[in-house]
Image (cartoon, rainbow, N blue to C red):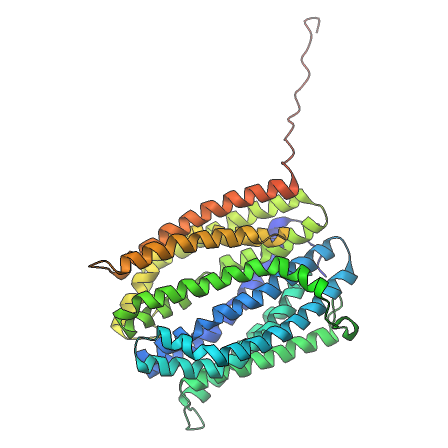
Amino acid sequence: MSDLTQGSIPRHLVRLAAPLAAGMVFQTLYYLVDLYFVARLGDAAIAGVATAGNVQFIVMALTQVLGVGTMALIAHAMGRRDHADANLIFNQGLVLAGLAALLTLVGGLGFGGRYVASLGADPATVAAGKTYLYWFLPGLALQFAMVTMGSALRGTGIVKPTMIVQVATVLINAALAPVLIAGWLTGKPLGVAGAGLATTLAILIGVVLMWLYFERLEKAVAVDRRLLRPDPRVWGRILRIGLPTGGEFALMFVHIGVVYWIIRDFGAAAQAGYGLGSRIMQAIFLPAMAIAFATAPLAGQNFGAGRYDRVRETFRAASILGTAIMVVITIACRWRPELFFTPFTREAEVVAVGAGFLSFVAWNFVASGLVFTCSGMFQALGNTVPSLISSSGRMILFVIPAVWLSGRPGFALTDLWMVSVVTVAIQAAFSLWLLRLELRRRLGSPAPVVVPVPPTLSPEG
């Protein structure tokens, strides 16, 4: 365990965020490595993999239900030095992870193909998307165990082991991708099926490595077979915190699905450009997201320990650091957005759509960073409902005008990107207001600063 209730808040924030960012970068490289090789197969393959990959947001929603709930409760338990409760939460999280993995396999096989077919711009895109999804599905199911174990460590203030495993799995994926996708060495290219299989095998190895770490090295929380008996009471504690966060990720899935549905009449190149641009945006957001991920256990342990002054200080430090990072990213994306796309595709139309998307939405990057930070604070406080309310409001504000505009004469993709920029700015302001209310409710009003006044001398001196 790493005690986050003592010492410099900014130092803790950077110490936690650096390996989290590295791990998240490598995790995103799963998909960028796949896209690099899949891009050689043509526009339909890119669009198909990007469309099927959006099922990942549903899985991410479910993994975050477990991950956020487990992390927050373990952080609170560590803050009040209740190791028995932390261990109980961890083991029950593993039970829920197993059930969620089974649900993912059944749901993906039953409904995944229909989802891809509903969004694909043409038959070739649909075929590529279905093939990729079915081979990627076991890896998605394995993510529940990976996220639960990593979140438990994050709650204890330990993040390096998770980062190391993520790096290892990405290297494995990078080694397998050219072999399975392009047929290097074997002479038997599997195409998009190889992309899904490479990622699944890499995640499987990552889960095994994490399990070995907990079995042999982890001391704060550990797998205890006596605590694996299903306990609905503990499940309720995890789900009360995790479900609203899962709802947020589900809204991301709906948001991207709506965009794909709206732009499908622009053709496979437009879907490929947007899909690639979205993946790149996710990758460059990772430093700011790492700050938000570090905010949650840092503020969470201090909240559990009753150190409310340090909870507020965590928010201030995270907001400043996250905003600085987003300003730099905004400048880079406004300057030469096409440079982010050239490693993946030379298709002029795909690059034009993707670069236009990235350049336009760069104006909301600072606002997005503040939304991430607020979300991390709500997780730390053990109440993620305000985040869900904020995301739901943004979804309504986006979908209604976007669908309306798409039916108007002269509708262009830039109209869609403009709606996105405006609604994210509104969401950021709303999230900050909701966080202010929650901090007052949970922590009370900040203590007034008392400035000592020197005594005045009497006329007599």
